[in-house]
Image 1 (cartoon, one colour):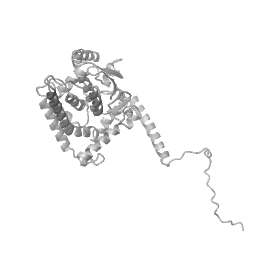
Image 2 (tube, one colour):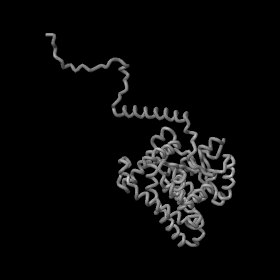
Image 3 (spheres, one colour):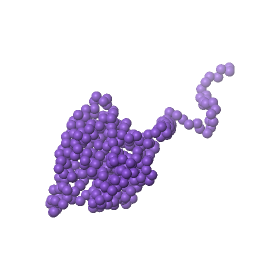
Image 4 (cartoon, one colour):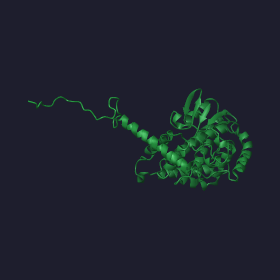
Length: 362
């Protein structure tokens, strides 16, 4: 099996919520799965990442991938406090209820903040476009905007194309903040959300909280809220250092080290949580020494080396070429522009003689 995800940034294994959620699920499970961190969403069945290739079949989306993994017996272990089948069933029901609550209260505003807020959407689109090969980076991020538009239309009654004064997301924002407060309360005295081991609920929380905490946006209300909850920040940082000490990526530091871990295109996502615990401190220490500083995490505010004048000029030129080809193709397909035929090599235009004029020779 091989999993395809977006490459990470800000010290995270991926820039995407669902990708981080799936990677955490795999780490908590101790699954031996090959992960490709340079996945192309255009190759995915739904045009998004993550997706998986198993037995020659492509499976897209976190939910379907987890269904396939669960059928193969891959999943986070049950906590030690569930000695019989009845307790395991109750435990699974409780976890599903918690996940449903987070999905209903946090997901809508999370998607709007990244892909619907006019102040943020260009920043988010740029982050994703840098992880997608040209020319697919002009098309694939649009999928997330359309998905967000479906959410706002069905739950709030407005379209993203409407004027900004009609974007009433006050209820979305209130529900999201209430959900974050609930999560922080649950984690107050606990290392994990339920029990003494990580569960799928923890994978879900890591997916949302890691992106909210690390992605720097012009209008990131939830990031400011998370920073007021130290338990949530510690929760994200602990999972990152414990399970993703090697997979965490930052484009700024990666260019300063040759053959660094962030430059890996593929890596084997193997090992049990205990193995990760034993190796996290040494891996993190080595990375800090190589970078020449004591900071383990990145705020996302460093200058990206891919944003230099030469790189921007290349992107502008390629963007212009792609746009020109697209416009010419559109004009030809719609009959606005016609290409010269073999019988007319740039000569004067020839008109057919209708033959219905009067003979004035008499």
